[in-house]
Every structure is written in structure tokens, then in C-alpha cells.
Length: 210
Image 1 (tube, one colour):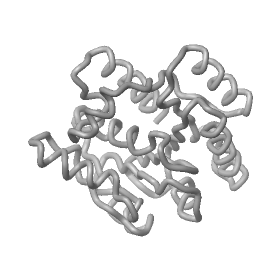
Image 2 (image 1 turned 180 degrees about the vertical axis):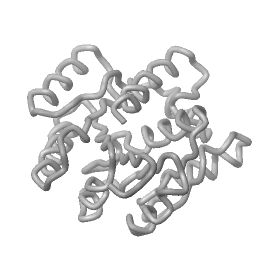
Image 3 (image 1 turned 45 degrees about the vertical axis):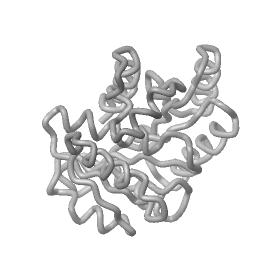
């Protein structure tokens, strides 16, 4: 692709499915591994990631790397070779920029909840990316904000039956995850070891596909 580092993108058709949540967690864990990170917030309307990082620093927490808002994908890519990993947090909607991101990324993460309201647009986005020439092995769907084992199994079955990869692990619906992010932390940095381990499992599954 012309870049010396890894590019990982978090994309979605809609907001509220955990896209920025996973992008932040991935950045935190990659930084802990000693990698240099550029986290590009491509949502200029909300700037969710950049606002979270500002809050993180104000609370005295370690930075996750270099975090910046970009209005255009190509502007973020110009800095690509200066870091080990470029993380692209796309806007919460499908657009021409979504395909632009998908074509340069080494790995795509499409978060979804377990309801059909979340699953259907996520799978449709994955279908559309493949149709536009994105290799299916670069695409994976991550389960976020799920509650029961049965809905996890049902969602996993729906994704795999649609012909797409579902990342191992999942992020359960827990208030402690929201509180951690409110404090400028990632979902891998809560006060609860079991919740951190659950989030770590999903992040590691994403890492393993790079």
C-alpha cells in the first residue's frame, strides 16, 4: 500500500455502536506495547476521540500517542510513515471517505451491537466494501454492548452466515465501561480486572489479524 506502518480503521454506518470505544482501547493497548501511535479522529462534527483524549490528559493520565482531528483522509495519511500504527476513527456514517479509508487500511473493524438494527447496516456495509473491491480478509465485525450469551451466539451466527469474520471476544454492556471513558480512560482500564480482561480479549483478537 506504500506505507511502512500498519493502518487500522474503525468504521460504521451509524453512531452509538462502539466504534470510537474500540479505537481508543486499541490505541491504549498498542501504546502500552511500546509502539508509536497516531490516532486520527475523522469525525469533524463531534470530535469524540480528540475530546476524550483532552479529558484524559486533563485527568493526569498518560497520552495514547498523537491524537488529531482531520477533515480529509489524505491529510492523515501524509503522517503515516512517522508512526508504527495509524488508527483511523471514521465518521459514524457511510460516505465516500469510508471507501477511501477501506482501500488503504490493512485492517477494518466494524463494531456492532447484537440487535438487527445494528447488525443489518453493519453487514450491509461489509458487503458494500467487498463489492467495491476491498478484500474480505481485511474486514472483521466486532460485537460491542451485548448482554447475554444467547444474543452473542445469535449475532455471531448472523455475521458468519453472511460470509464475514467475527472477531473473537466481545464487549458486554457494563456501566463501568462508560464510567472509565467518562474519566478519559479506555475500556481496558476500568477498576475491574474481569472487565479489563474481557475488553483485552477483543482487542487482542483484532491485533492478531494484523
